[in-house]
Image 1 (cartoon, rainbow, N blue to C red):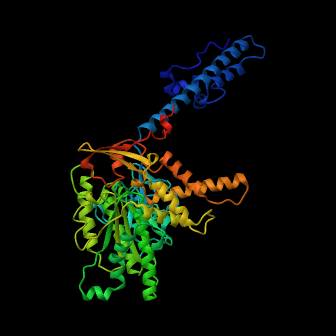
Image 2: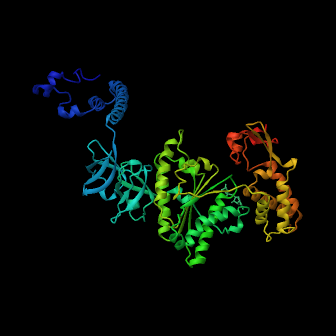
Image 3: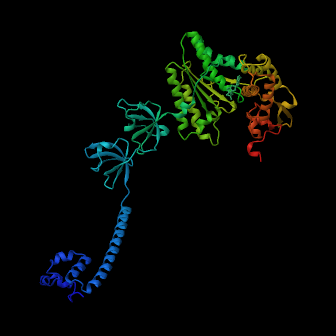
Length: 564
Ligand code: ADP
């Protein structure tokens, strides 16, 4: 065994100088060094004191193993505690702030905006200031020092540019009652060609424009190409065409005469009537024909600019956006007109945004849209190359303020085609340039007659008036240009299929047209899929007050959901 001396002197003894001489291993190393040794090393020292093969050496070896494993355990426990301590410190430390880097101030300081307030912040020397870009997010610690550069925000408010200032900064409009502001461009937009009307996304602090999202998306979508639509390509609407030409073409082509007579000039017109009867077609034809007329009369070619808006699209926008869009539509038209183009603003389903201001869901929006629309319309000079065309199935719902003289005071009714009108539309779609088995006019006459014949198989709707009187409506009573165009397309499809199976060039026959007429009736694609009277009433000119029931006579084609 080891010498009987205690391995350590008493704590009291170790503090006093005289005990130094009694320190264990004093002959080998001074007390300070001994105190630095681990228990294992001391054990090794003890072992050196024993002669080789001393029996206590075995005991010492055992003791050494035990002490070694104890030391391992202590080490592991210490590491675990350290980890927990570290995690606890992290959890207790305050959150970092995220700011927007605006610019560098000194070589080591930056101007950053945090929660809407500007700070001049120290920058961690490990971050090269030159690597930070205007508009990017930065992480700031408790002392508001920039400790990390983050990327650019991926989300943020979208606003429209009102003006691009000469130094590149952007003035943004005060929409929905907000104050107009000026923002700088982010590094990403430094070289971007921006224009008023562009939409940009701002950083969360609304100080920097980060991304351009293009011209107001909806407006771009509503810009339509006007193809060649001579008046002759519209069938059965001669009176309507005449009314439009009188309203729009005459004043523009004979400006002086109208001025001399001080004759009021409308700023547009309202087309009202059932769906599919050509209101949109007539609107576009107005644009195309006016351009030709002006070119023929003056030699100047004015390109047309045709904005086609659906009322509900505007109505469904978020608060303030509807008004802004309407203002913007007028602004675009005026801009284009100033550039010499013929600008048309075509508003389909106009009653949805320009309807009579009543109570109800759309009330609040209509109460701002209608007066705004009137003001915008009043701002248009007559004969200034801007024409407003409203289209509606329910003209009775349009606010009378819109239809006052000097605004849209021409209401033009578009009716369903009668038999001669239908025949003319069939003729338009059965051009002689197509491979027809008979002259187009012949085919058109036969098909139109079959379509309008008052035969039991053409009976389509049953109508019950409030008085109790019943009436049967035939297919001719609810025909439209759109239905006729669809029937001819279907017939062409039948002829093409036959040509493919018989491997012959093929011709469009009377039988194809009659079959297409039958299929169209059976499948009824262009009519409401429900049996609700309200849905069907929208298709007719009938006064809803007088009708108790209106619905299809035949059992209709089962809808996919009703097929078991
Ligand atoms: P609305 O605007 O009245 O609902 P549209 O003008 O959109 O009707 O008509 C849909 C389509 O039906 C047109 O693009 C055209 O192909 C066809 N169509 C409608 N009416 C006529 C018509 N009178 N003459 C020729 N084609 C017509």
